[in-house]
Length: 208
Image (cartoon, rainbow, N blue to C red; front, side):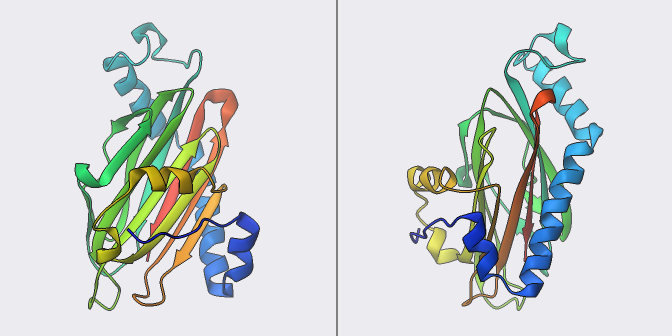
């Protein structure tokens, strides 16, 4: 995989066009809205109790350091995107609701939980909006540190994923991220939101 340096939030915003800034602003707002959605957190809490990640007696509330992450993925390309277990990596925490393996235009959800920390990365494959190149989109994140890393481009750049390098990129990231690949026209935006008092976090990513 091609090595791409992480950038600070200020550097990201400074490089964006007005249209890209508007898209990033929308993703930031959506992450906040996802944090307020009760449905996925309630479902995730039940799954965590069923898998005995938390005490079943605690299914109505959070105890200790266990935290939840609600994921919202939005596909704004012209076709379906796909993922698979060999292009998903869990550094910390566990998957509660699986990533959608097929992400049609629109949105899909996932969730994770962990004892004090959740860190993960996933890649989706598909074609660019012109439907003339095979491409990939990657998002990685870590909470409660509120770090996210995104990158996209030709699929050939993602043939040999170095999960160790990706982890370094995640942990250099900020609360939101954006990447535009000129060669393919692909774009990806992501943002994190948090409610640490209730052990809740959300991550929203949008693929173009």
